[in-house]
Image 1: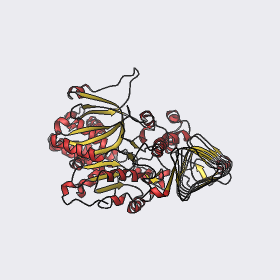
Image 2: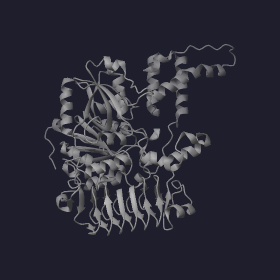
Image 3: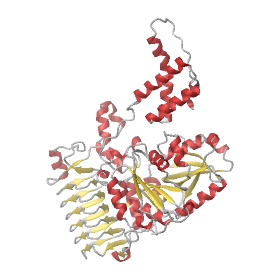
Amino acid sequence: SMSKPADEKDLVQAVVLADSFNSRFAPVARSLPRALFPLAGVPLIDYALNCLADAGVHECIVYCRSHYKSLASHLASSPQSKRFATPPVVRNARQPLGDAIRDLDQSRLIKNDFILAPADLVTNANLAELLAEHKRRRVKDANCLLTLVMRSTTGGFNASALMQAQERSFIAVSNADTGCLRMLSPAGMDKLGRIRLERAALLSCGRSRLWTGLIDLGLAVCSVHVPPRFTDEFDYRSLDDLVRGVLEHEEILGHTVSLHVLGGQEYACRVSNMNLYALVTRHLLDNWVYPMTPASMSGSRAATEHQVRQRNVYVSRLASVHRSARLEKSVLIGPGAQVGSGCHLVNCVIGSNCRVGDRTRLSDCYLWPGAVVSSDCNISRSLLCHNSTVLDDSQLTDRCVLTHGVRVGPSVVLTNCRLIVRSGRSEDSASTDEEVKQQLGKDSNAAVYKSAYSDRRDEAGDSDADSGPENDEDSVELEIWQTTLMADNVEYLSSESDSSSEAGNEVPPAEVGEDHFKRELLDVLQRAEQDKHPVDTMVVEINSIKHAFCVHIDRLKAILAYTILLYPLLKCEKDDESEDCQVEITPAEHFSQ
């Protein structure tokens, strides 16, 4: 581990967001947070910690909402944690990224410019150089609030594969000389194949550079002024809100955002869905994230624990592999694993203490520690979580997921993206006992998962049946595997969705308290009319109500316009004596502040 610098100005800090703040990996993430998902045999967060340690970070602050104890326990024993000058600090974040950054401001933990990174980021980029570049830019432009780091898919290794697996890409316009960001929006074309660009962004940029096919990494180098900015703007819930606010109010506040685009041989990708989980695993096994390899990330004794064979095959010296088993390419077998005779493995990860029976074929499969696959099975493009079991003569194909402790079989065939959970949870199960025996085998302890989308469709009635997927399995496919996700599951940098869904808790609806908020606004208008309040006083009162109810600025504008139009009508209804009620209302544009 490195030593802490004597001068506080030389202290390098990082903030890691260990919670996804969405329900995309539910119910897999109920018993294990995404930050601890095994990726090529190593917990996912260790890749981010390794990159930060290589960048010379002395202190690391980790924020999470669910599974606090599990994460703290892992960080206490992780070999990557020991590389920092002080052990990583784990703190609770009750809401998305916005509240975590506000907690940094209140606790006074940040001393200098810092690196903000998600726990599901895998990269070999030189973050130390990014931090140094940000500091040089700050010397020239003291108003530079942060440097946003994204990856280009227009060149470099496997750009097309990364692009296809992403939820969405972005287009941006920046100053070609200074890198100052002028426009950032999701990429999209109209029916004629045209891209809309903001004319003002191009005209104000001088020599402009247009970026297309940018991938969001959730990575940024932030100045010490970012936490106070989140405190001042209470409705900021994500880094996206901050970037949008800076671009919209740059002339007023004077702050700027810079853009740094990774490309060429620099690898960077977030594991935000199962397609990306499979893709990044393949890239790790094929050494495209060098110097991070399965051997180097396994611990201090990695060089002696793994035997590296031809075609990127890694076999632990503590594993037992039958000599007739065929390990074709891109295979990792962890310690304590057993592979029987006549097996055929290609593009697979066999976790520690897993068992693979005789004459079993595995292709593009990922077995987490303790998983068991019996004899004569054929499994492809599937995930078996901790301690799950597939009994004899079973077939799993086309994106099946068995959650923790699930047992299926024998002699079953599962296809078309089935998400299987343990039975006994009525809210998860969409199957009856008879259906379980027919679909999942007579010895199964599982049921087909009932997705959150199906619950919403049932509550909405048959009229909305055509607005979404045709069946429950399709909605599960959207949530976990596919790149085209439901609108309320898409996240940008840090989603507004609540991570409590991953912990098994229900997310409260956004409309809760909105009626109360409207009544408060009506009271403000009534007091303003009676007491002749100036516009500035009304603005202060409305902003205080907005902060108390955590209402986003866009929603506030809509509710405020509605309330202003509604107020004279309500006043006329209460005034029984007046036949012609006339009320002077302050123009709505005064409230845009």
